Image (tube, rainbow, N blue to C red; front, side, top):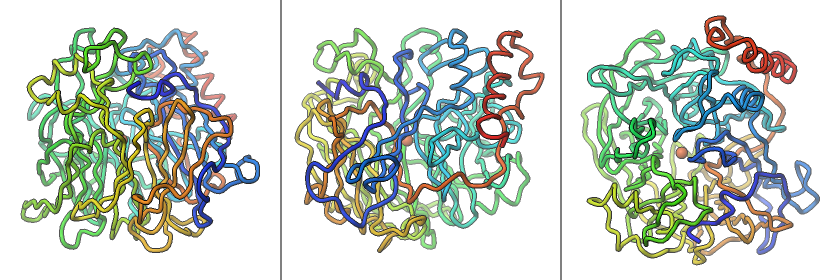
Length: 572
Ligand SMILES: [Fe+2]
């Protein structure tokens, strides 16, 4: 079994967990949030399915759990997209990159939870951030009227706009807004996607955007990072659209070996009206990295950790009838999941000087065991992001059962098949920021375990704040979820000593299994819904957007959903 069957066969559901090993720390608290696609089975590639949000409370006996138990609570995101889909599922067709319909392309909001102060959002790469109620997890609103985004990225001005964006916007702690992106096709300087930096100050229902002058590229902007003075965008490099595949052919596009990076000075953006092209400072990095994280303090340069995705092509997914690396039929439980990494991955910290264009590698780490760099955990407090100390990374291990022969053929000139032929353990590893020196690691020798997105919980954080004892990533806990067909577990490690093993482990009281989850995040507390001026779905239902729909579609779809949402949210 390359990865647990329950990744695709389990269903998202509420349950409670209990401590089964160790002692639960008394100075951990807050909430751990997860995003995931529903894995309904309707899509050939499950990561495009409509999303849900899950919250694990790290304080026992809260949010409906019995004393001594921990609440796992999950909700489908009842967005306009989900509601219209559920009202008229027959109108939605499926393709290799998700659903489409006469209403437009739904916003799946399935990739990452984004806690921001006392507000909670869910994100993905092809839609606007979606605000959720932190306590009930109900849908609240999408971010920014589509007109203020400069309209959809492509596919027409529809009820459900297609907005090619970023799954990882970043909240600015000093300017009190959110940085994200929008991509749109352009013909010059060559045919490709032109990125814009997008800003939302959360005070209202409009965003601002600034296109990057002279930039056109064929990829995506999965992550946005920042320093005090700079916004950082990059071609993620790990997902490239393939026109042949979209029209029913075979994928032939492959990922690049190096990708462009764009730095934009924040003051330059605010000096220009929304819609004005701005000039970025351009660099390149190698290998491509889906996820990168800058130190907020840029007084001696822009220092960025690049979580490399060497030969990790997220455009490749597993189909029925596929053969794995050894030529055996793929496990049915893997169908609809992505093709896993085809090389060990490199993690690197690089210092950029945008004033003179110089680049210096501060440290790098890659060994045979650093395969399937999944995701990482860090201190997201303001103090921690200014002076990060430790960076915790989960490696899922080599899984040749989830590398297909189609992938091998596509990458035959770039892959070392012998190096990827054995299953290897997963590891939770701690690196020192700056040097990328390996400080500690914990091995998961049972390859039927699949560790997934970890998060950092600061020690003794005051409820309502993101800061704990000493900032940076060493003074607190790394919370490491483990997917397994014998039951989902949550291991908690001392962040300063992950190599010592978990200090406590949670299991579902009935050894429940959890399906595929994507990103996680930590939020210090859950309060009610913050007062704010929010976008109403009905505000975007212009005659022009409704014109292509027939009466039945208008009544059962957008008009009905607009009324439902006004009733649920009080018209806010
Ligand atoms: Fe991501």
